Image 1 (cartoon, rainbow, N blue to C red):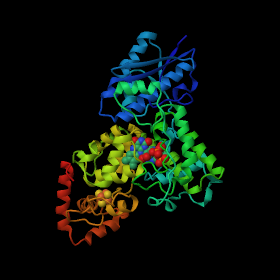
Image 2 (spheres, helix red, strand yellow; image 1 turned 90 degrees about the vertical axis):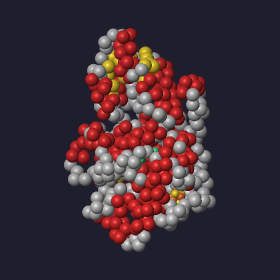
Image 3 (cartoon, rainbow, N blue to C red; image 1 turned 120 degrees about the horizontal axis):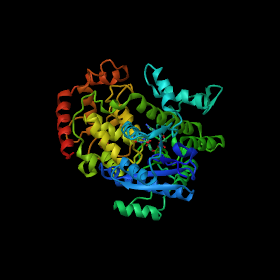
Image 4 (cartoon, helix red, strand yellow; image 1 turned 180 degrees about the vertical axis):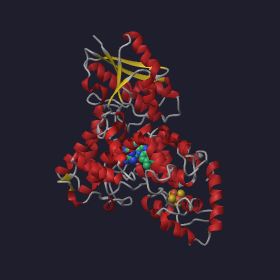
Length: 491
Ligand SMILES: Cc1cc2nc3c(=O)[nH]c(=O)nc-3n(C[C@H](O)[C@H](O)[C@H](O)COP(=O)(O)OP(=O)(O)OC[C@H]3O[C@@H](n4cnc5c(N)ncnc54)[C@H](O)[C@@H]3O)c2cc1C
Ligand code: SF4
């Protein structure tokens, strides 16, 4: 007899973790709700919507195959969907793993759902809170080292394998020349995919798997073909290779199709077998047990109001080029936005040093930028976008997370990308018609905020550089023209 309704959110798709870890077909009913609000409430990227819905429908199908009673409900809202399940089965208790945003958690808690601890991460919210509560500043590297020791990963007797905690200095190479990138895995579409695609009127790419089997194949492909080269080129932006050696695992980790534990185990096993060097394995491990856990921990630690911070008073409306890559001639930006348009994904550095850098330098409102990123990316979720955008990307928290803003001009982008060649702008120029907008705006940003950053020793050198500029009046004039044209979508 059914005694409990187990609510499986679309980012809890796993039988071994979350509310299903102790589920039994004879006792538990599995409920998933595809809410109309979720489908049409915001202008979601169709590829993202397709991935979320198709992954959930495949999961529901697998639950049925495992003998569970399943209700996959299409309803106006999640609560309406749960009401309909209760109408059919009676007022049974509804249980869920802790949800992944403040808003969702409050709504379901008010409805009477009870929660078990969210174990989709390696660090519980309370354990992270204990760590954060002891810190003077929330330096990710300190958290990461503590994680390595706590989890016993790449450490021997409390000391880091290879003698160093962090191999970043060996990585960060520009895109390689005459290099052959291994082929990417393509994921074939099945009947459920086609049904979802037809409903959403979207023709999906073959980039993203929608099943656990596909996610596991992606993990195996990464470990075999990409892990060993991951470190050196993780910060590069190539012209003809959109993913480089990145794993493309974030969507699966974030919806529960993969767990961080198995991803790390696979990488460590390759390391032990001598298939990947320490600088790549350490770099990858840092992303998963360091950054990912830190971002989730900070989301819950900082609370719901953190999302609304705007300490640099950035008020510019979202630039038209973000919603239409044809609205700019800037090669790097047009290429990155057009990649997002294609497959709802670009790797970390285009997100940070192209898209976010542009939002930061133009003084774009952080909440408008956050909403856009949240809607466009395949792996986006509230817990992960909020600290990444408000903290890391736009410095809207005045340095709570990152000690300095990630602001960069054309010189950095010229070194790390292949886009400047062939761009109508010149990365070395800060004034004049063909000056690179990043270079102009970088100096203008420092100029506008020099008082805010006057005491920040990490950008002291750059501020000193500003004092040496002989063309500040022309620079300010060019910057105001650049800002005006970017806002009009004509640069
Ligand atoms: C402005 C900005 C916004 C971002 N938004 C998201 C987001 O919405 N969802 C998301 O999963 N990641 C986000 N990231 C982090 C990172 O860019 C993506 O996780 C990564 O590009 C996903 O591709 P991948 O799986 O190939 O990652 P890889 O480069 O192969 O890295 C491995 C894994 O590390 C984890 N990871 C690394 N950095 C972060 C981070 N800063 N926060 C959380 N996880 C991290 C991811 O799970 C990723 O799959 C953002 C970063 C920035 C700078
Ligand atoms: S010159 Fe400037 S705008 Fe053009 S690609 Fe380089 S960094 Fe981007």
